Amino acid sequence: MKNRKWIIGLCIGIILIFSATIFLYLKDQNINDGENSGKVIKVANYDGDLINIGGQLIQAYMEPFLKKPDEDKESVRNLSVQKEELLQFSNDEVVVKIDFNLTPQNNKTHKSWGKIKDGKLQGSWILKIKISNENNKYTYKIIDKEKSKRDNNKSKIVMEARKKEKKLAKSDKNYYLEGHNIKVTYDGGNSWINVPIDAKVLFSRGEPLENTQELQKGSFIITANNISFVYGGSEGFPITFLTSKDKGVTWRKAVVSDETSGTRQLFLDFTSDKNGHVVATGDRAMSSEMTYVYETNDGGINWGKIGDTSSITHTLVNGAAFSTDKIGFICYKSYEQYPKIRYTTDKGKSWNDLKLPLPVEYNNKFTQAQIPKFEGKKGEILVSQGENSDFGKGKMGKFITEDYGLTWKFDRVVIAE
Image (cartoon, rainbow, N blue to C red; front, side, top):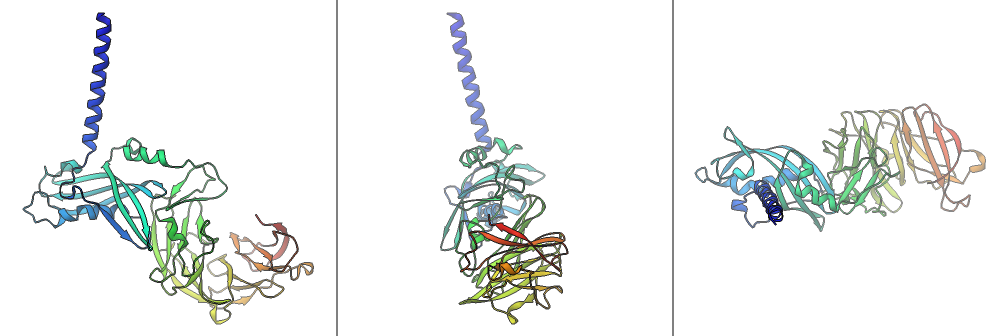
């Protein structure tokens, strides 16, 4: 009997200790809202940018306290965001960790926000954010928050988000779309990286894309050293470049151009760490459109216009790419029996016709040159069949080069994937 009572007492003691531990943990994680108690903290934008969404929400949260007079014990000053990290992204919910500093007027009032040392409050919060979109306006609302511990894996918010997140396996496709979320992989699906932008924005063009289930071909780069996207080009939304050069740890964006509001397609390439190009097509009228070429020489920080083929042709574009900082190719829709391609060797100052060595037996069969692809000196252009060709479903002519595209040769017939 005594042993039984001792066991019961031990169990009760363990339960009480466990309950007390949980209570103290939750209390320690709790953030006292004070002035913001019961308020909905939210911000909005029109470009779907999530790069510093945590910082914007912290600014909105602190605004009432920043506006208070010095004598008010809840007032704070000198808010500074130190670091922001996107931890989870699933469909329409984002989890970010935000580190910030501020100066509280009263050291005791906001002690639940973080550690106070030498009159400075050092805060590290994890925010759970809800995304909504209405009439192209993106709204971001804090729906939960807690103080961060050293190990993000122990965060209640992070653990809940991971339960909802879809497990992605290895894949031949290097990106995954789900609602507002886009994830990318540079290693065949062994690891996935959340991109800090609303996925729907990547489909933004002046002329709506026909396919919104897959990213426009040629508008993105996904490698271990370069994850980049180009998008926009509509009214009030300039052509924009988003990139990470450190596998998604940090991101930055830049405006390429606000010259056109009727963009149809955007093509992006980098021929080195510093040299890159964007070819924008749009402002279409029936079967004609304008074509603009932009370059960067500093990895995408600054962009400038270097070419405009509209003075020589207004034909619709199928694809475009550069092989070096000077040599580039634009492939057009052909209404003839041969592919229509223009190329430049002087950074877009002049454009000449490129005649691919198409074997006679394929005349009037392979007519539509697609997006050129290059890896160093070597490159290829696939040429698909015209609308009225009956040579065989999916068959394309493959042309290759080993000198950056200065000369080409016919390789073989291939079947499109």
